[in-house]
Length: 518
Image (cartoon, rainbow, N blue to C red; front, side, top):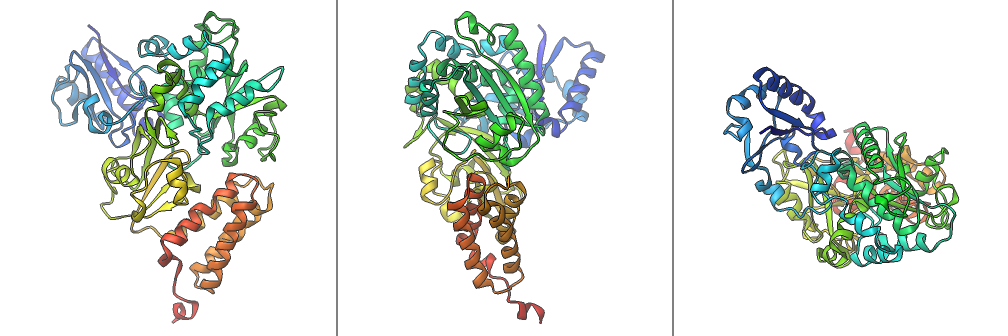
């Protein structure tokens, strides 16, 4: 029987040498005349072990990693094709603690299947949600998603069902589903992993959204920095269209839905939904004033659903297993699972999908394993470059939208970046202001001018120039930006700045100018 060898082809694995490993393995298989084939899967999300190579055995898949091209010969000599012992052998993949303790609903197939094999997708539960959706009335689909408690996984946490219901009830000759795949936050990679490792689940989720709201056209808007994701989703759309999953008759039903990928130039502000719509229309990525809401007048002034990749990819399991099944996971108003992306100065960086409710300390210390440098954790930024910095004193905060909001933080896209005790939080606050100044669309004054002034004030504090006065000025700037900005770029920039000032005041008290000169 032909042995299947799995070597990831997602961006994280490629960055760490997966292409060289695959080439070396293919050459070795040919030279040795082995009855084996290579399957290019997605990443399992354990980035410290990439490239993670797996082999299918009678007892299940066995993992080896991190594998380099030079390891291929010794692996094969050690009986790798039958799961033989080797220094790089990690044991059965599913029994690795990092994977075994997860609750994988959205990422159930990621790293398991061939991303472009529709047969593989079906064999692992794919299309069951869509099959159910084509048999239901649109309002029944919307009700199921609403009852599941699914909230936007892109950062805002807005109930998905309410957004869909609004579009369903809005009249329009044409409606659209827009997937916001413009994943620009630092320390986030969940969208990319799904698009590269299980693109059919995104396609299925968008098709369900289309049927639920009466939309017949969908767009995946992503950034040019994601060529592997663009290639994977584009290829999967072609496969889905040829198989009748997309097109004039979805799975042979009376419903029509088709979609395509559109690539942006990488402007961070185009992750904001109205700026994204302008970019999709071929205009400059400027934020629109609301109302009107995109659900009423969105793409080309038509009713439009805009959801994040993970939001849409979570829909198929809800339709397949029911709202109650999904809702049973989580806590409070945060239902279901969340793919937490652990990055920065941490031992075990990667993606960890679990139900809402773990504490920040559990995520950083137990799952992430503490800092890679071995030094104490000083701060953890949750929610991308506009997320608040949490000190160890707040590590008992449960991963929940409301719990984080109560501590003046936000979950955002669930990216976690860890910093050790060498981090200068004044520099981090300055970076937030500088980031906003560079990425601002320029439409509103608080964001455009406030961020520029914020950089200048941070520099004055660092130079010891009237530090108390300038700390007060920085806090005042943050207040103006938070409540006066047109969108979340300017509105959320104060989160990292204020949290850094609040929790790490010692970093904002440099020596006065006179003392520094002595």
